Image 1 (cartoon, rainbow, N blue to C red):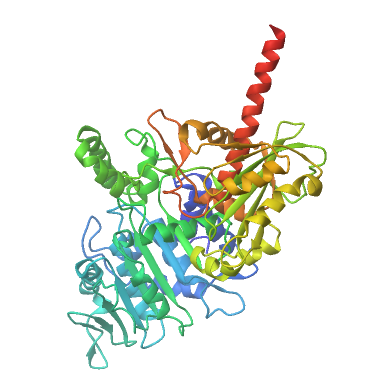
Image 2 (cartoon, rainbow, N blue to C red; image 1 turned 45 degrees about the vertical axis):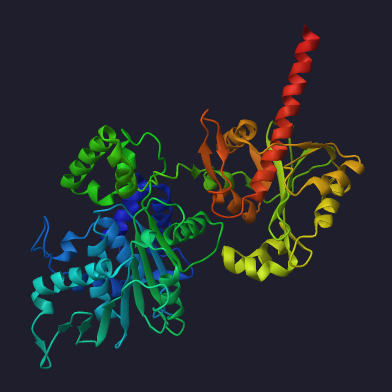
Length: 562
């Protein structure tokens, strides 16, 4: 296995010899862990790897710079990794059962996506059970048939795939299908539809250019047709598209949460070639390196990208297309991730925080009555670290619905004590109020103040004030919240926060998307954030109060000195 090109590529990525974005590094680390035999549940099937290698030596490149050579010699490292990891990672207890059911590939244009899909299907023709059906879906029929054309091109140039077998051509090529007569496995390119893709039984399917789909229906239809398939498999492949609201971005966010460890799902494999940093694109070569793995091995591709970047700098009209298609940056959506979840997770602790005797600041983010609500309290410890305790509240009767829609397990968070179900189909605000009023007794703390957004909060605030708590309205505007937003990020990066292990809190951070206003104040954009962020907003409200207290204290100290 150590001589396999997929393994060598993964090792070079992790060692920093090949520039790659952080999510690719995480997936490579996991692959190496399995390939080294260190995973108790999964392994790489060496026999299957050998079979695939022999098959690839029979396939001939039909065109391009390496036309006439074997596909085995022409595949690049990232392509090998996708093929070997997805098709050859199996359960130790049942080698016939593959680990992965979904493979997500995010990659810029002209990086061999269609060719890779064609190679995958040709391999699957021979290794999948007889009478299997394969499908490709795309935003339109022409795009879907691009895969069919690529398969036909490889077949036509590969002598081993031509000729007769038991009196029949080895491959039967029709207008709407390709059938391998050696195994009776068939491939069908499908036209795009929002309602007519049900009724299929796909052993394997590929969705290409998913970012351009107007609906997730094609993906859902393919998945629902695989319920009775042992080794169900779907490939989701795309580059970025100008909008952040599309089925591909949904799949990307889910894959990122899995790679970050905030969600547990062993069946998803992701190679996400998007740059870690999106600013300074005009002269930052790492952005091109992170988005275009093909260019790292083919100089002509790299030279063309440098030329296109120069044109995008000089001609603004070409900028959006260049950023989107060649850098995997959504140009129209300037929102960016808030905090690197890996750095956040480095701040968590499994040891309960000792709150006794501390003065704390409470942040409240009350939602509509049928949505999530959050309360966070925090303070600095004697070492200057920010101690944080977040809590989420959800409607008790909507747990199953939220599990399905948000693709996370609220039951697990409730059991861990990180989430409180209350009310029925809507949140019982009195439960939230009682929680806040009980903090002083439960944790032996003194509440210095409660920061809140007035939206949906006025009734609860009146009750809290009657109980003797000082409540401060915090206007949800970049001019107000940019300071705590900036401070919280800095504290996380410096490792100066502590919170008890809480995956739901981490998911909230991962959902956050930030923007800059006209004064370059950084703020979290609730509309562009991808999922629930209530716990983060509550944290910022509490941190704002803590900052204001520091400012006021400093002013008083200065006045005394003068």
